[in-house]
Image 1 (tube, helix red, strand yellow):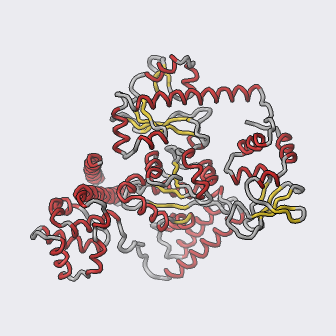
Image 2: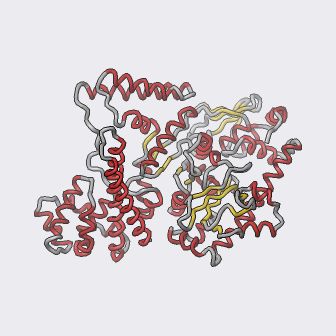
Image 3: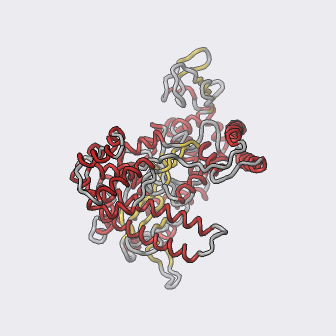
Length: 582
C-alpha cells in the first residue's frame, strides 16, 4: 500500500511523540525534554531523550534515534505501514483512502486470504478422516500431539480433486482458486486439478497469522518429495518465514530467534521448548528474510543441518548478509554435531543438550567467514598470503556500512598477522580438531561398559562402526575385543579395563544410568545410537570418495561411483531401520 508523503509528514507533526512513547516506557520531564531508560538496551541510568519540540527520540547510550513511526518499527517490530496503521488506530485517525487500483488489489488479496482459510479448514478435517489416516500416523510418528498439530495448523490434502469440488460448492470462482495456488490447469486436458494431493501440509502464515501458502510432504514415492505453493500476490518465498506468527512474540521478548532449514525442525524446536524457531521456505536464506529475523533479534542464530548442504547454506548466508550488515546487527551459526538436523538431535539428546549446544557451540559471523577464507588453503608463501589478503579485501568491500567494514577489516588484518606469524617457514599442517566429542560415540561407549551383556547382542554391528575420538576409540576397541572372547558384567568389564591401564576417573565419565530415564529402554537406545553412528561413518566415507572422484588424479571413476552407490544403499537401509524404531 502506498501512502501519500504529505499524510506521513502531517502524522509526524500531529502526534505527540512524548505522549506516544510514555505509554510504553516511563518518562520524566527535565527542562524541555523527557528522559527515561532506553527500551533498546539495558541500562540503569536514563539516557533516552524524547523531545516534542524536535519531534524525535535519541539514546545517548546506544545511539537509537528516530521519530514516532520509527519507534513503533523498532520497539514493536512492525513494518512501516503497520506502524502508521497502529498510530492511526490508537489516535482515532482515518487512514488515507486508497486509489481504485489499490482498492482492487486489496480486495483481491482479501479474497485470497479467505480462500486459503477455507482450504485450511477443509484440509484439517481431512487429516482426522479415514483418508488422512496415513498423514496423521506420519505426524504421530514424528512425535506431534494434537496440541502441536493445532498450533501449526497441520493438515492433509487427499488424493483427487476433492478440494476443488469443495471450493466450487462454496461458490468460489475458479480464478480465485487458481490465483491462490490451490489448483492448476492440466496441460493435457486443459481442466483444473488440485495442486496438493496425498500430502501432509504445513500451512505458511504471515506475521499476523493469516494463511498465505502451504508446504506439502508426499506420503508415497511420488516426486517431488516436498512441494511449496507457487508464488502469488500475497506469497513470496523469499519474503516470508515459516513459523513467524508462532515465534514472533517470544522471540522479541527474548531477543532470540533460531532459523532452521526445515518445517519439522522448526516444529520440533517449539515442541522441546525453543519457541523462537522459524525457517526459510525451501530456498537459500534471502536478504529480506534476514531483515525479518533482525526485527526479532539483533543476532539471529542460524541452525542448519550437519551435512554438506547445510554447511554450504551457512556459508551462503554469511556471504549474503555482508552488504546489509550494520551496527548492532549480525548473525550467529550453530553447526549440529552428532545428528543430521535439529529434529534428530532433539529426539536423540533432548532439550538440555540442545541448549548447551546453543550456549557453547555457536560461532560468530566473523569466525565462520574466517573459516571460509582459510579452510583447505595453503598460505606459506608471500604470494599465497597476498592472494588470501586480496580475497578477504574483495569480500569485505561488499559491506556497505563504513563503520562495520572498518572494524571487519581491522579484525581480519589482525587474524592474518597472527596466523602468518605462526607459520613462518614451517610446512603446512592440517587443522584437525583433537579428540572430537560426538554424543553418539559417547553413548555407545557408555552402553558397552554399563550393559556389556546386552551389548553382546550388538557385537557384530559394533564391529562395523568407527569412533573418531581417540580416547573413546581405544577403550571401545578394547571392549569389543574382550567381549568377543569372554562374557562380562558391568563390574567385571570395569575391572578388566582398569587392569588394561585405563584410569577409573576416565571410565566414570561413561556411567550411563544418568543418561536415560528408564534402563529397560537401553536396548532400543543402543540400537538407535549404533545405527546413527554407522550412518555418520558412511556419510564421511561417501564424502571422501566424492572428493576423490572430483580430483584430477582419479583414474577409476566407475569403481568409485559403484562404491558410492553401495554406500547410498546402506544409508537408505539404515534410514528405514531408524524409521521402524520411531
